[in-house]
Image (tube, rainbow, N blue to C red):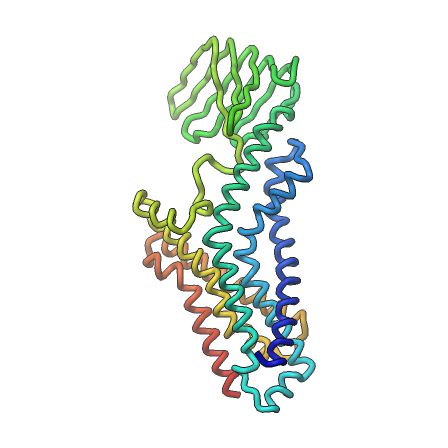
Amino acid sequence: MLLIHRSILKELTSSLLLSILFLNFTLMMEKLLRLSRVLSGVGTSVADIAKIILYLQPQILILTIPMAMLLSVLLTYGRMNTDNEMIVLRGSGMSFRGISTPVVYLGIACFVLSLAMSFYFSPKGSVLLRGKVSEILTTRAPMTIEEGIFNTAFKDIIILVKEKPAPDRLSGIFIVDERKKEEHKVIVAKEGRIVPEQESLAFSLSSGHIYITKKDIFTDISFGKYHFKLNPSVESAEKKNSELTPMELLVASKKFPEKRVQFFLEFYRRLSMPAICLIIILLGPSLSLMAGKSGRLGGLTVGLSVFAVYYTLLLYGENLARSGQIPHLAGAWMAFAVLGLFSLLIFERVNKK
């Protein structure tokens, strides 16, 4: 590797790390705010928050690695263009392809890292995140049940108790269960006891009634003892597509034909997101020269604009595939093909100058 290539690669790497930190912090705030609405009042510890942040990283890095790579290339080559270093290098006989060589090394490294996040670490992190949040709610949510206050710590469930004689004992219990959208339950019990279970929480209720409404049917059931089980979680108990590995997605597409398109779209996204790093090898240096001497702010604006357009096309293509207007393969790769063709055209245009 030439000395100039090592120098450029060093600057690219430092810009990449700073860009990842900035973008990760920005995107992580949105996810933490969403989780805080679920965990508010439960009393999470610093260690719990640290684990949640760690489990969120793979999901966020799938998005931020390509974005950070493009920003680092735009900032580095934009700085070189502003300082007339690009003119000196091209004047010394180095071609634009030669000047862009460090981006190839960076792009391959980012592609491999992003692929590892997409195929392995992200599904594993999603499973660990769900388990951690469920554990926090299971072990600490009972402490949030207070006398005379509506408790909404559990998804689609509202709990109100008149008295709480002991930490695990309740009296005058009123529960609204809306987990089944087509069947709503209202449970009233004279007293009850909180019973922690392995991955869930349950109430052992006594002397009460269950009122069930389903369409135009109303049912009243009285009971002496009733075991009411909860599944505290951020999402439904069903495993999400983001928690499945690529092989599990392919298996699920055969097992559930009615959801075949959804599984294939998720599988293709796992491939296309890391592959953007390979497109940026052509796109980044070209855009930095076309942006002229607009400085760091100009590079940031161009980079974010490119990804805004790309994600818009990606969502549009996936929606067309879900509605059946185009094949799922075309919908999943439409944005990638458009960005790849655009990158190739402007790279050749800049290279011929």
